[in-house]
Amino acid sequence: MIRVLVVDNSVSFLAAATEVILVADGFELAGVAQTGEDALEFARISRPDLALIDLNMPGLDGHETAARMAAESPETVTVVMTAALDRTSVMNGLFDKRLLSPAALAEIWDRAYVPSVTQR
Amino acid sequence: MLDGVGVSLTEIASESSVAQRVWPRVERRDGVLGFVLEVALLAALYYGSAKLGYELGFSGPVAAIVWLPVGVGIAYLYLRGLVFWPGVLLGDLLANDYTRLPVGTALAQTVGNVLEVLLAAYLLRRAARSGYLLGRVDGLVRLLPPVALATMVSATVGTLASRVGGVVSPGAFAAVWRTWWLGDACGALVVVPLALAWSRPRSRLSPARAAEFVLMLAVTCTLTGIAFSSPKALEYLAFPGLIWAGLRFGQRGATLALVLVTGVAIWYTRNADGPFAFHSITHSILSTQLFIAVATVSALCVAAIVSEREQFAAGLAESRAANLRAADSERRRIERDLHDGAQQRLIALLIRLRVAEEQIPQEPGRAAQVLADAETELGIALEELRELSHGTHPTVLTDLGLATAIRSIAARASQRIHLVELPTARVDAAAETTAYYVFLEAITNAQKHAPDAMVSVRVRATKRALTIEVGDDGSGGAEETPGGGLEGLRDRVEAAGGMFRLQSGEEIGTRVTAVLRL
Image (cartoon, rainbow over all chains, first blue to last red; front, side):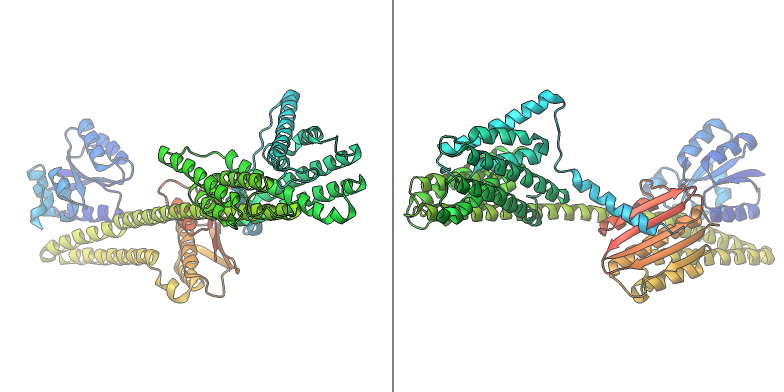
């Protein structure tokens, strides 16, 4: 099973993402965090396989959190998500969080992240 | 906890007037030596200006066309402090012509002159408490009565002493009193504004402006010269120069041009030239004095109006900037609320619906649960959007007024809200809107930081102001942070020309007060 950590300050999104992970085959929820700081601490302890991290958070933002997590927990694949997706963020390899689904989760994992703006 | 309303409003009012009370500022040199030096300096200036008056023929045996020392004395005491009055006494004693006057008369005149200068300086300092005297037309209106009143003291004392000393005949008493009074008043009107205007700090003129300044002075001088060297009634020729000075160079230009005009006018009149050279000296002097008084007041008015216009323009620019800041901070707030609130919920909803879609064939029961959750989420998102749109377009407010808008918010708030007082009639729409935002922001803050606290709301409308006070009995700790809601609120209130105050502490809870002009 692939263990997933979801990091977002929106409780609504965390709940929806949890729903997706619960129904996605081969994935299980490792945990959720509302701030980058909490996420880093969680990752140090439980070493998830995949971390979905929202870009726009108070305190540490998504990029910063992902960079530190990659340094501290190299075995965790980090993916930064945003809803405010534009051309620049696509080129920077951000994931459009509106597209999160069991299939998208599998695709992210298989290809270690594919930008997916064309799939909508 | 709203008991202190009256007190807090008075405090706000007094705070705002403190800033205006910086002028005149007195810097005294320390020590006895400094004091003695200043007294000597004033005495020398006073004596010098008296001698200058005599030299230029400004002064007669008992009264002058323009008695400059009175202006010098008033200006010095006004700017540096009343304590330097011995300088006036000394200067006046030195300037007296003891060969032509009985000693008693001369001394009595000196007493009158010192009293005059002291009284004028005292009254002007009082008048200046509510603002710079030359900067506004109402300042000028406050400047004139002290000058007129104080100079009457000297005219009365001086003329009486001359009469008692036998220098003035009974028939000449009225004419001498009038000449004395107008002469002293003109002296004060010419010198005091000059000193006031030129003692204020100001940025340097550009070379082009400096050249224009010199040209203006030359033209004013020439025109006045032409006017007063011809026996024809051309005295109005002095006014274009004075208006130029006032319009382009404000108080500094106007006061300096006035000195030139006055000098030229007196010079020619004393040499029996110009439009005021009548057979009767008394008549000549009176006409010249009236000319000087009218020219002075007119030129100072032009300069004051120009200065008022500049202040108004600066105030407008500042308020426009504050408006922009308020709009900007409001825009950021809406952006933030949209991003953190409704947008995230809608994304979550989208994802849940997609999950449900996939679940229907396999696990219809589970899909139904996911759909129910999605429904709840959608309801919350709608409610958030509704609140947000209430924040930006308060239709209840525009249709039904502030009191109803506040009641409707209070009715559906999760917080306990006590409406202590609400206005019974509609007031100015802009003030209502601003007060509404004060209420909304204060309630939002209380919900965030003191959800269990009791909130009291008091809104009072008088003829002149709408006052809103929202307080809670929480544990305080509210502060204005850059870009935060409270700072945005202050910007909004101040842009509307109102006063804003935040008080927050463990003892008093948090209280937001805004006073909006009607």
